[in-house]
Image (cartoon, rainbow, N blue to C red):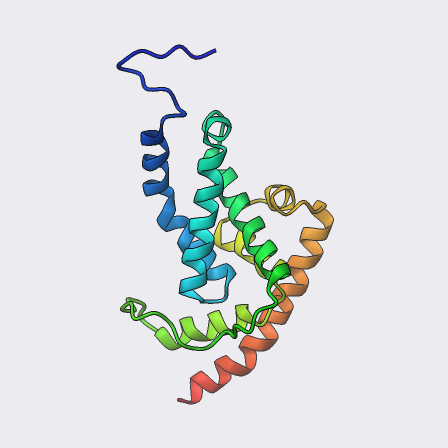
Length: 176
């Protein structure tokens, strides 16, 4: 049991959550951006919803060994839930927010985001967790509530689909 003093604030105080949110928020938005296939507005919404869920359970979450890992898992689950419930008339477009691009090759970035957007949500989640977040097969399986073998299979198939989509689009980029 943890004892607190005036100099040692309890982990369930809002200031601790604000510090956590300020530190992890940008990372959550970047991950959500990849999960959504480049939809910056939806990415911000998903990150905000994730932080809202974290705040509601902050007393418990703040005592976990890895609150950041819990936040990533919550983000992926929020994304997958959103995709299951998506029955609105919203359509993904090639239009991005007005943020400046600092990449050396913005066309390559857009091509990759379009290719990711063509994958099913669960495949996209596997690729983002495995290769963007650099998680192990076991960590990815736990986050997505899958077996390790299913993550390996889904990862292999998703990479193959991504390669086939990128093969044609990258060839078009090379001729420009």
